[in-house]
Image (cartoon, one colour):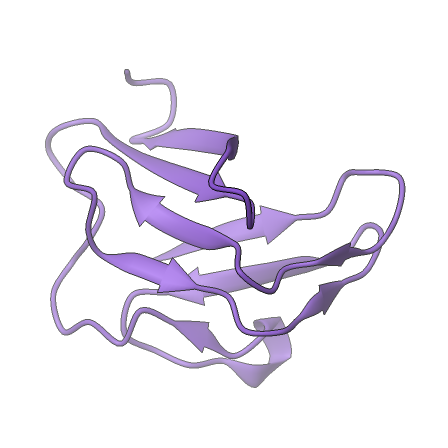
Length: 94
């Protein structure tokens, strides 16, 4: 499983200090290293796999993060700790 992050803004974004979090549990937390996400670029953060072609990011966790039965919400926070984007899984559930 993975969460895909897309830069739909008007310029490249430095992701250093940004965090991806399971909002309901407040854990686990993936902290982005110094990474420049170009305009229109996409990366994926996997639960326990690493794919260099999609950014090479992973929580490094051996069990599922995103619930397969109850709605779960992923949150992307910027370096200042502000929620920038969120999505629910399964999609459309809240």
